[in-house]
Length: 154
Image (tube, rainbow, N blue to C red):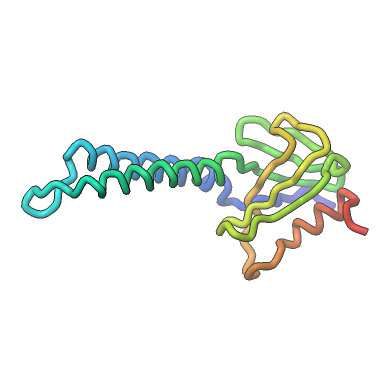
């Protein structure tokens, strides 16, 4: 088996670019709204409730984006092991260290989480965004492949 990449080419964008653009853009809009620099027609100030709605959406949106994106890893594999990278360093993990593999089908990126017997440099689990496939609500074939390579299926 040749080395191949399991994670999507969009991982870098989902991990770094989109969060930065959304958090900074929405944050700037919220700050401008609170400072009074965003006004409506005839220089009318928005109702106070709008400020709190924007602030709440910014806080909740930032929390969700960081929760779902910040931990994403770039994942490759060969016949012996996984290679995981956080874009600063790369570690290798043997398939025998895997205790479970699950996919979150509720999120659009459908992240796959690999759980490890012992903590690695990245912790006791690692999530990655798989390559996009058109398969509504089905588990990505990579999940079953990793389980099989780890000896988790009969």
